[in-house]
Length: 112
Length: 110
Image 1 (tube, chains in turn green, red):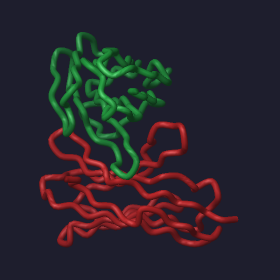
Image 2 (cartoon, chains in turn brown, purple):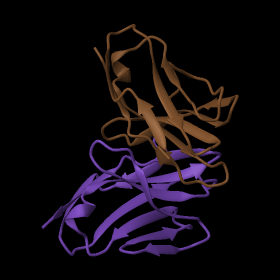
Image 3 (cartoon, helix red, strand yellow):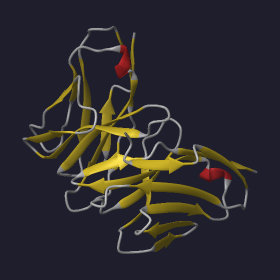
Image 4 (cartoon, chains in turn red, purple):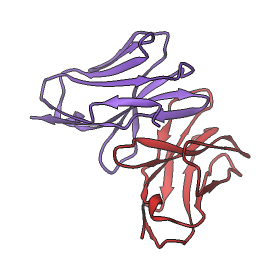
């Protein structure tokens, strides 16, 4: 099992550009989520999904879109990048009945 | 505002010493309290977790103490080792969502 994979590992964007962060898991987990990690703020939930076709907002959803067309994939789209979105982004997954979340290795995004 | 407050922000402990990290929460609907360990450049990994109907859980050198009435829980790292140097996050789960504390960077000096 590869677990949770994320691409790219690093990305630099200019203000106003759009991009998609990829996340995939091969553990057949129903639950997937996206977090951003900023110094001194821990991890904050952006969006989450409890199964294919179902998504919902987390704590900091503005400026981000998600979709869940398959169990395996949960991409995060930045619509118009802003410097405030400079962060490290983590994707995580878990079984719906088991609370243990498995995290990916992260994507470090810089918006200039 | 953060739903889980974590302290201290950082701590330094000698090898063999005890590290203690504290967390507090307000939402009584939280039903699961995990601790995550994160090494630089890596994603967080589950270390140990507890449910609110248990007051203490121990796994090896790591112990969670949980005080439901005070809405507080803590992580104790016994016999701290240099390999324990990492950032530790407490979290609380409610309604499918995890709320994280701000994190504590632990440095174990040999």
